[in-house]
Image 1: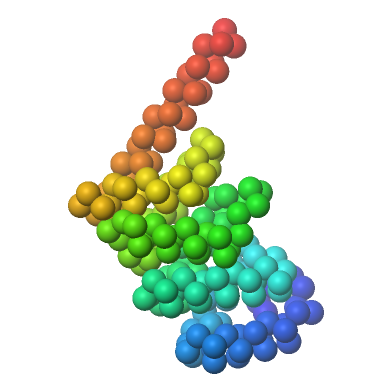
Image 2: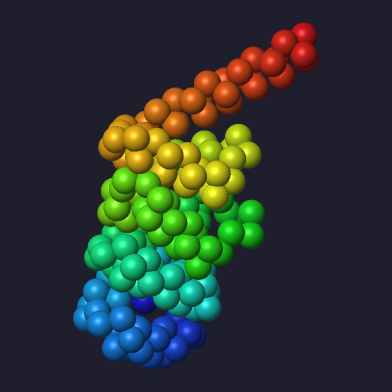
Length: 171
């Protein structure tokens, strides 16, 4: 409640936590910790908070990681791609496919993806394309954090070049 401006949906959220706890085999306290992270990352209303928690549960279960880690990666991407219409469920699916096709884990992705998602979004690279790039680079043996750092470097160079081109055109 301490993070919420509007607590009118607290009963629905509490019931959802209990239901998801049973459905996904997590302790209610683990569900609450992940929800806290989701709310603190910016989810405003009960419906989006519950949708994100549901997607994080599915990602944690499919990606064999803890719920809080899955929620962290999910919310990082949601915030980076805000306004693009990308849903928590779709992000979860893309992260799972990235793991499946690459040589990485959901835990590794969740810890690294925030380092590249914002710039990726800024230069117009879709999350699907970013996931495919991470999978391609990691499958060749490069660990996830190094792959993400390399992709971030490439995207920074593109962004810098675009800024220089705009500046030159304005002169």
